Length: 72
Image (cartoon, rainbow, N blue to C red):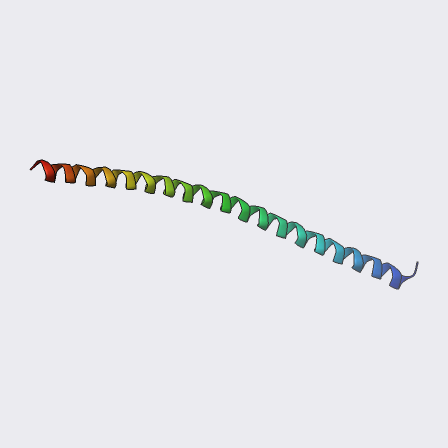
């Protein structure tokens, strides 16, 4: 194997190594975003359930006000 062939093998190995490293970095970013997305979904579900409870309370108070207005 000549000097130029040896240099070419080393350069190709370095390029492949960098490509693999970039792929792993991208995969880690995607997994991190997936975790953040799950957290956001949980927060949205929590907010929706609170909003549902708030709507129920509002409707109950409206009924009580109507009943109080009728009984006066």
